[in-house]
Image (cartoon, rainbow, N blue to C red; front, side):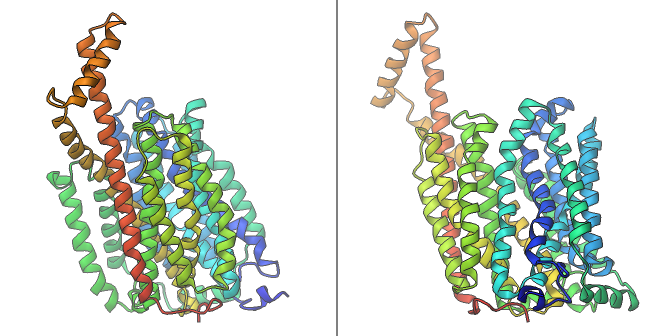
Length: 527
């Protein structure tokens, strides 16, 4: 037995095999879920047209998945404990795969939304359980490299999703966006059955819980579901419904706040809580959760709006816009192993600090872009950002487990994924709100300059009118329309620059959080 296997053999899912053999096996399902989260957005317009609904209504295809996913993630630790980790994991993969098949066969929006809810329930529990398996299988000094290998999958999904989704939708149909999950899910189930074992310590823990009687915290479950579900709807639909001018948004926001306020004291006083609030007494866990939230804001927020910038402002196709992220994905994949190796040799706080500084530099660089930028400019800016992402994901995940009991690994993994997903939702919602409102502000300022007292406007109008005169069109009207379109493009670009600056500010303000972290030795892990 190798040193890796011997360190905690009663909790390792690798059994007598080399632990590295199971990293790829348990990553397949998460790749499928993360890919699906990013891939569906590209196909929304095609889904709306095919099912004869408006684009706004079709967005419930995304919202329903996010709500179900958000609700199940914090419960996945408890479910893995009482059902058995491997059994719960395989059930989640099977549910997600079956729901993907139903999505691909859907002939109306109602059926599709219900299938997406099942997808969200199945997919929500996978990442927390996988991370818990990695923590139990690898010794502390190898854990950073294991998370790096796993992190490649987590980051590769959002990078490949828009490109693959655009290609499938353009060349086949939106149904294949979901059907592509079926063979991946079946392969995952087969490989997990063969390679992943349920370790003795986990079997004993599940048996002890059942022997003591499974007591479900129904009130805690309801409060968690209401809090995260209503919060997800509020953030995802807020901009479309004009935020608090909409009674629906006000209702969901109030329910989310009241549920959260009631949840904390209830879970503190319960002997068998759904969420172990006591974990937040650990300084490193609290700071790691905040930093993982920031990572979600940075990663998912920028992953969505950079292709959006290229499509809306510069007129790129969905496939071409997705390709702009590819260079960044290559940088992330190359740097993940480097981050994993350094995690066992360097103070983790320094690595996180480096990653945040790279985000500051990247967003500053993006803030220098203009409507004259090329495809290479966008790709290089994204590559700079992606270069630093591994130095956030791997060390932050590592730091979250430092000093905690192995029995808490399932719940720690679940809560860290809640933090990242909430960060992503907040990031996407904030970005879309800023784009809409800052675009209106810039448009109002630019319109003020479109008058004959402005010499630049007068010169441009004469020049463009002369061009259209030679084409035999209504020169005056065509010239005004051209100038107005350019003004809209400039206003939109300026709003994107504002978002880049805001994300730069968020990254910069996160650096002081590192001072609150307790120093951990590079090879220190869970107690």
